[in-house]
Amino acid sequence: MGLILMLLAAGQVGDSTPTLDRPPLFVVAVQDKGDLRTDDYETVYKRAKAKGCRLVVLVAAKWCAPCREAKRQIGRTAISPRVEFCIVDYDADRKLARKIMQDVRRLPVLVVYDQVAGRWVASRHSGLQSRDFYHRVFAGPPPSLK
Image 1 (cartoon, rainbow, N blue to C red):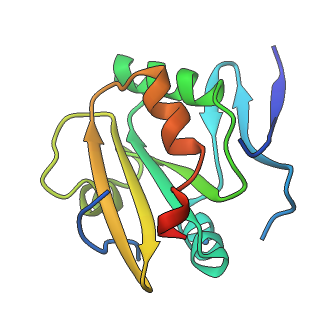
Image 2: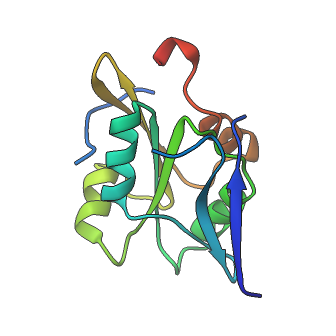
Image 3: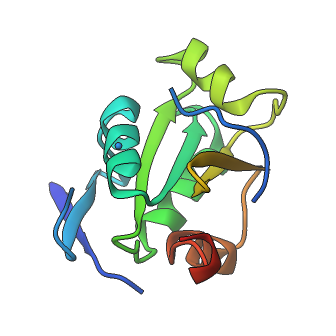
């Protein structure tokens, strides 16, 4: 089972933590033997900031069963061009992961950042979420937030 490239098509509230130019159809993630992979956080953040779009960050760990399931569900979800997505490995970059997670301590953590009036507004979601939730998050921000 080699690499599978996923082509994706178009289809909160908190603080300002983020410290990310593609055509309408683009490769967002690569699945290798069921493991979802993305560009690094800094690259994805810069693209989202330049595009003025939603940034979604999944903080996960390889040993975490709900994290693996979240990656599987997200890997089966169409991601809008108005969304940039990355995964931060909790064990590989604990300092960045903790900064993104803030006071949330249960993996996986999905953080949704929207740009509102030039500021990042964050919403943090802990634990495995429903498939419908992932579809709503990755469809992009509502028109009122653009």
